[in-house]
Length: 249
Image (cartoon, rainbow, N blue to C red; front, side):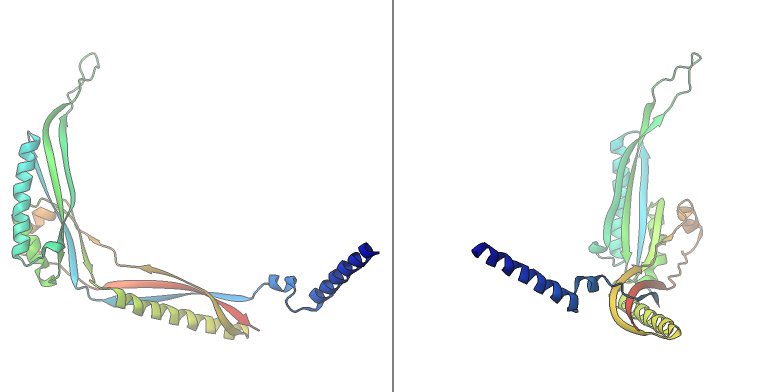
């Protein structure tokens, strides 16, 4: 008799919860309803004048021995560093960006029996690259002129940057979001619906790229010219946002 009473009790509970789920607004099926959305990409661009330049200069020296090549390179680079400091460039804005010592080989021609003799080391090459940040843009051409006369014989890239681009990127983000909102309102109005809450926002930003210098002509052109002409132009910061809205119908 007691077992029948317990069984009846559980049956009652099961029936009660089945009925509750059937009328509840929080039934499981309601959570699987697909939302109607509008997904829009907005773009924002802000152009500003740069306030700092970064250049890459290098010294390459060759000699029969590694020690002789290293000594020649060190002497030339020491003169470049002294000249940069004399131009008012702080030590924090001078950084070695690459240093390499490598042997130079001579490969003798094949013999009549087509055997190849092993290569011989005939000298060594030492290269030392220096990254320089110039905070006075009026001195960029003068600095380039001077480093060439001091023995710099390889050049990399020059990049005009902004020391603190956070405010510029902030403006670009605002412009991108405003663009996305305008597009979404246009689409919603054309479709006869209203924008609901924002479901998701994602962002992607792009900063200006470095301007390459002609490596092979770096020294020759600078030596022929009275002064290297450099145009800094403007930096354009580009931000895109993807925004997903729920549609109120």
